[in-house]
Length: 306
Image 1 (cartoon, rainbow, N blue to C red):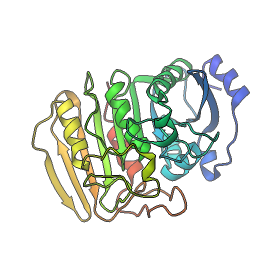
Image 2 (image 1 turned 90 degrees about the vertical axis):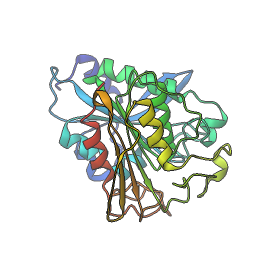
Image 3 (image 1 turned 135 degrees about the vertical axis):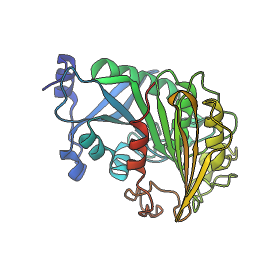
Image 4 (image 1 turned 60 degrees about the vertical axis):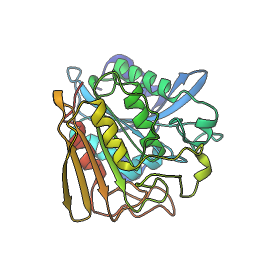
């Protein structure tokens, strides 16, 4: 195996084939745990085949939505297939909950559920996970990215805000800001995707909806455009973005100094879902074909570096 000896022995011990269908042949499936604050935190890791010890490759962290887990998110987004084709490492960290592997959430500040109510240190967990993967795998520390859906999208905002020294870019999908986020100490590029038919995280802002409104602490979300405005200000971008409309897609793109980038996509015909992916759970909104979120996000990420 073309990886450092530590990785080789670790993989032999803990590798578990998760039965994820066709995606399982795209890259090695590894389920691992990391001890953080006295708890064993779980994540699924995909390492593309054919890497050599001389290569340093990007790492993409993909965060599940509230009530989700790594398996659902891998199947929904298709990021493992993309990683195998493009040659980057992808990790699917898991939040926490009363059950071991389901109904998991992230503490994104005002959402959601178990993680919020128990003040789980998810920023610390992800920070430690990044350090671990840089030590044990061929991860380029200047090309670490975070994306996620819903509660995971909110969490990726928080990671960009609080870990700018480790994360080059974020891409929240159907996520939101609450208005009290910390301005990052250094630039972090950001791409946002929201559906205008979303009833769970309303793009116009306001109270949460959907199946689990009580999972939030009651703080209303800001309108979707506030995400772009926050990151544009943090990255010292020009005030007036270029705006385009192509069919059902509204697109805002800011001019930013130093290679940073800020973009927002609003989809008129899309709800609470991963656009262009698979349904994440029974009753989820139709992902449609208007935009392939995974393709758009990776194209954005690979142009960014700290």
